[in-house]
Amino acid sequence: MTNRFTVSGLTKTYGSNVVVDNLDLEIEHGEFLVLLGPSGCGKTTTLRCLAGLETPQGGSIAFRGHPVFDAASKTSVPAHKRNIGMVFQSYALWPHMTVAENIRYPLKVRKLKKAIADGAVEAAAAMVDCGALLDRYPSQLSGGQQQRVAVARGLVAEPDLVLFDEPLSNLDARLRDQVRSQIHQLHQQLGFTAVFVTHDQSEAFALGDRLAIMKAGKIEQYDAPEYVFENPVSEYVAAFIGMGNRLELRRGHDGWITSASDVIDLGASVVRDRADEGDLAVARFRPDDLLLHRSTEDVPAGHIALHAELVTYEYGGRYFDVTVKTGVEQLAVRAGAAEHSATLRGSRPGDPVVVSFSPSCLRVYADPDGDTASRPDLVASTSGGLS
Ligand SMILES: Nc1ncnc2c1ncn2[C@@H]1O[C@H](COP(=O)(O)OP(=O)(O)OP(=O)(O)O)[C@@H](O)[C@H]1O
Ligand SMILES: [Mg+2]
Image (cartoon, rainbow, N blue to C red; front, side, top):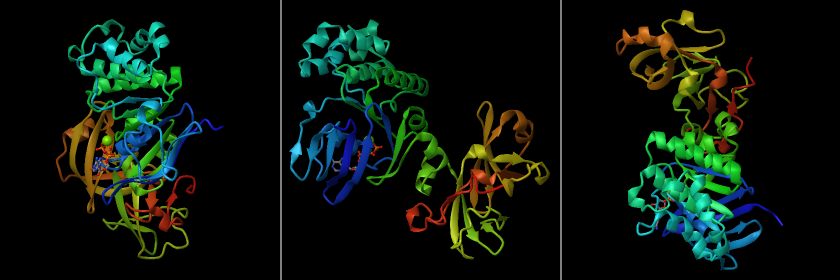
């Protein structure tokens, strides 16, 4: 019997609003899956269907080979029998219970008296460095401590599947990093299976064994983080995982033409047979893949250079986040502080600059923002195809 968690054809509607749309997912036992997507795309609803807190209209869900939901046969295992741990955005601790009672709660519900006797509560509290807080009430804890207690409560009963719904988003930046790394360590130690919802790409990359990027109730891409980072399947995914720069391109006689009428040579790998003159495409790339120069003389060999003007810059410590304008588009450049401080500090909006990038950084999509499947021949990574 399979050890996987399987979701097939899951569909959840509210009235005429299809919130989860025929969604398929396979989660390996012990895998940490991150569900990533913008607000309203159906992440929480998907989790709630897994937990048994929502009744889907269609599809099926099986945990390690055991069906817990099947619309066709009207099977639905109730939430408390699914052996799931949940950690929410709002810590959702019981205010009238101490830390120890909160962590003990899932064991009591499941009548796991032996685990309680064996010190499972204390062990779970110690795992998240809350061993000294067992007698306190939630109101006597910081946000970070409350969320760590919630993590302990989610894991204490050794559930088959742990569901995390944006558990870090109420924490300030420093605590978020701490609790994130604690969750990561616990997963490595304990090997539980997790579905972790977020709309934060850095969380997704840091934690996920695989990422499922959701768009309007469907999974748009489902791959390892490194693969998604290098090969976003659509412009939607590219934009969502940090390729914030966008250049609109039109196919001309000698290459692709930007909105500023620069002709750029993306190489043969992108310009497939069906790239006819007049065809449109969109290139996406990251701010840290762009270099900033004072003149074209400084542009490295093999780079594509664009003339631009300075819009604004912000100091970020080791770097400046610089915004430049080229044609109709604004581009973000992350420029090293050491090399650029003197020039930038003396510059003004409107000053001419040059930006450059290696063509291998670009991801080119034929169908802006949309479904790339319609012109797969045009969708190409330029990496590897260029010399
Ligand atoms: N009980 C409900 N009744 C009607 N519509 C709902 C209900 N719950 C969610 N929705 C709608 O379903 C869609 C998906 O909601 P969901 O909470 O799953 O989004 P999400 O991806 O978790 O978003 P966020 O990142 O903001 O938490 C939204 O348009 C939402 O308004
Ligand atoms: Mg949500």
